[in-house]
Picture (tube, rainbow, N blue to C red):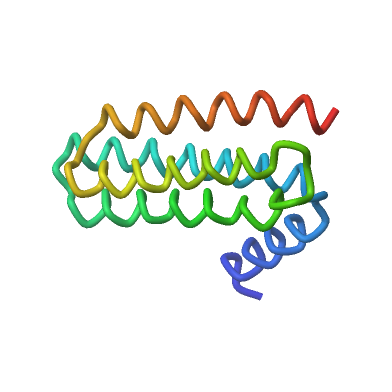
Length: 120
């Protein structure tokens, strides 16, 4: 088996075994990684990579909605926050704005810390 295929299969199976709460943490962590790469792409003026990474972060953030919508107290407010972050990332992508990305990263870090408490 190809090493890349094996790694992909391992990741797929590992993610499938996560609880919804831990999967949500994984989504946040991956979105933060994508935003970090997106900021680097802005600094190097790599428009294609910036666009790709910000869109990856948006997709990951939007995947949180089905996990929490109606399943947790405050889920509706969290959906509003996710919508806000998504709109800010659209703006950051259009403007190549690192400050807006930093704002979303800060919100994601706060969400990650709060969600860690839920997981415990």
